[in-house]
Length: 225
Image (cartoon, rainbow, N blue to C red; front, side, top):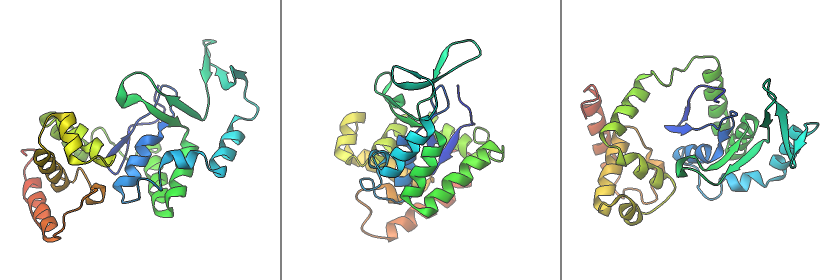
């Protein structure tokens, strides 16, 4: 069961598992959206750092263990896995990944950059304090409406964030590479993606002016697309 409201960093939903750990793969995507290098700031590299390993060791001290993993008892008597890191390798693809406790999300953000660290802290704090109403906010309503109208574009956005080329994405979604590029430009214009996400950025900066003008024009409509 989630322990916090839905949290979005740079338009990326930071998913949680049943005990409230956060999918650090999503935090990595948010860092890429913010313009950081995909390879040098990968969450896999962070988790093997000395700082991360020492944090994990500190958080597991004194906890009872079952098959080598720290557990605690629920009121029902059912043991709960309290491991700071849990790797999910089966089930639906969108739920697979590495789930970590909030402290490790903060540590990862600090490892990425002070600016990203501050952004993560403020976002999580706002969620805890109830200052951000993600599921009822205008932006989230718009995002839900957009991907309801264009359901295939959510997968396109995820694959672009992962750095996949347009030709490969086209094979996955059964569309031409040019169609994928058009969808990406439309999502940038609507503020659902950042230009920093693109592996091959537009050569002509004037193109971005076209995106911005389209965004200003279309935002005047109430989700009319």
